[in-house]
Amino acid sequence: MSAASETSKRQQLKDLAATLRLVWRASPAQTTWFALTTLLASVLPAANLYVSKLLLNAVAQSVTGGESYASLLSLLGLQVGLVITSGVLSTVQNSARELLGDSLQHQISAMILQKATELEVERFENAETYDRLQQAYREVGARPVQVATQIVGLAGGLVTLLSVGGLMAQLGPLIVPLILLSALPGVYVSSRFGVENYRMLRWQTHDARVQNYFGSILTSDTLVKEVRLFNVEPYLLARWREYYLGFRKQLESIVRRRGWGNLGASLVSALLVGAASALVLRRAAAGQLTVGDFSLFALGIAQIQGTLSGLLSGISGIYQNLLYMRNLYEFLELPSRDLNAGEVWEGPIDTIEFQEVAFRYPLTERDVLRGLSFTVRRGEALALVGENGAGKTTAMKLLTRLFEPTAGKILLNGQDAARFSPRSVQKQMSIIFQDFGQYQMQAGENISLAETERLGDEAGQQLAVEQAGADFVNELPEGLKTPLGRLFQGGRQLSGGQWQRLALARLYFRDASVLVFDEPTAALDARAEFDTIQALREQARDRITLLISHRFSTVRLADQIIVLDEGKVMEAGSHDELMTLNGRYAALYNLQAAGYLDRASQTT
Image 1: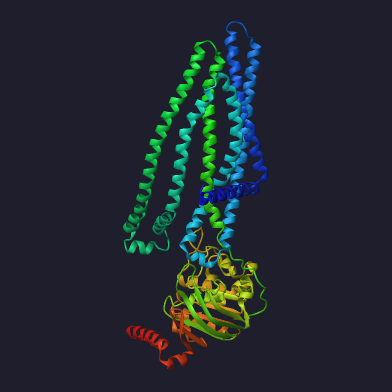
Image 2 (image 1 turned 90 degrees about the horizontal axis):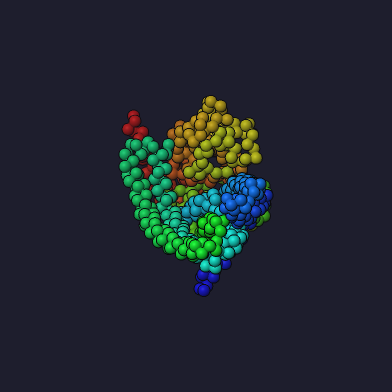
């Protein structure tokens, strides 16, 4: 056995143990009931066959007056009792399984969501993470309970096989082996193509996400205008169908080969059962078997075939289900980041200093930031300027401890930020990102998400609304309690500018000593931009303010301006100093100013 194969087997045994622990933790009571009823029910097939044999023999003898009516009724009553017992056990078993499956679904969903909260933010900028997330969610359903069912089923199946096989062994030494052999071809085919199905689904994960994305564009309320205007529907439908046809081609190959395999297995099985039947008929013709014995054989064939098939399929099914469960465990095994690890930061942040900070995304070979250094103090504002991709937003993610530098240090009040837990540092920071959240919740909830401990603080929400100039909130049908967005019934949709003002209110709601603005006026008109800048000046007096903006009317309020180019500092200074320098900043500023003048002249 190769080392890789040995490692794979050990991994599967670990996954099996982890899955069984998962099932037990989900509901010990339902797991116990399910296992107990399954094992009890596994004795019933042999009991039914034996009672049926006795009953048929009794009926045959009663024809010649050898058995009384009372004797026949007692055997019938025994058979009916077994049927009732089977029904009771089946009812309890199915109920326990359903409740156990529901508990498992909830538990695994919670585990996946909890894991998502622990992943490094960089992971969410990697397509592989989304593939693993989708594969994990796909296993939320029946896989774990199927493993538990199959494990218990193996034990029950062995009991059934031994008991029924013991009864049928009386019919001849070759009968049971032949019937056992007849079940093997079908199990082999099922096992082989079950693994192929798994591999196909795994290969298709990424392409399936792309196909679903094309479908989501066609049904998106925010994209429907562009899709209609540019007549994109035929292209999107064609791309969606292109992926489907690729999936279909793979599916047709598997279905065709599986069909031929099942046909061959059926033929082999029929020949083996025919051979066993011929041996029984020979003994019957010789007068060595009773009517009850023949009924035992006829009914036992299906019982043994089904039980053995179930046993082997159970082993194969456990293997296949563990392959799918590995998808879940691979996601859960992704490296986590404990945001509460480290010393607890206390008090406001008075100074921020970047010392030769660099950052590179995992699995890449290019530094997004290189040697970034600056210092900003309470009451000051610093702006980062540069073209798209220059590293501005990455610098803000480093500052807010969403990312950690790959080189250099970030000092807070002269202390290395890495000493402190990210969560405690983040409590002193409030931010609005360029891709700010539009939460399909009540307006007040949208604001209070910045500090969920104050969800019921309507006075604080109202103050944040005023600071952000989001007065439209007071004109909504239910004010702060108005549901927003189109996702749920009764929601009120907002314009882009209104959503951005709400995001600004969320920023102001948190009582933070550091305010970070990433394109805070991108969706606002000129008047709203002016009002926002005035409010920003007011709020920034006793705090540290960091700005990212392409609008120089916003950037001008900063005490320091840093011009980034391909992750490096190209220029730094105040607005006046950089204009005097007449470098990159001055060129960009004059270019934008000329655009404003051109538009102004065209409107006069």
